[in-house]
Length: 142
Image (tube, rainbow, N blue to C red):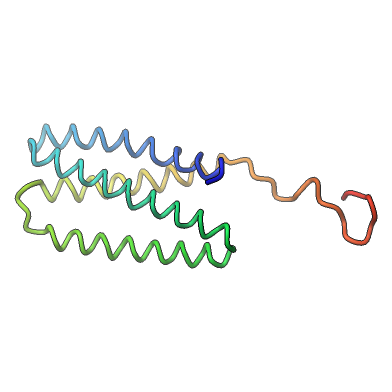
């Protein structure tokens, strides 16, 4: 993982963790222990899904830009499928509050996406290589 990738990960994970903490506290106040557990699980699901997704795309980017796009689309569809499976498997659970879980997942997903976008916008990436040489001209830089 390069420094740029780590900056993007931190820009997304830190605000999401803080929002998740707020969601757990609010859910605990409104729904008790079941609400707090549902919100906590929601934060963990979002954090795991998006961290694994970002790592997969970073790994694929080392191979080629085409592979990176394929990995991004594959990770997106895998996350959707895994979330549907999780929601279906635990739809009748009484251990935690499904409403707190769902609202926390939605809020944390929006927060992660905004943090990731902000992280990408703050990166200082050069558009051209300043040390590149022009083919056919010996010793000249352009």
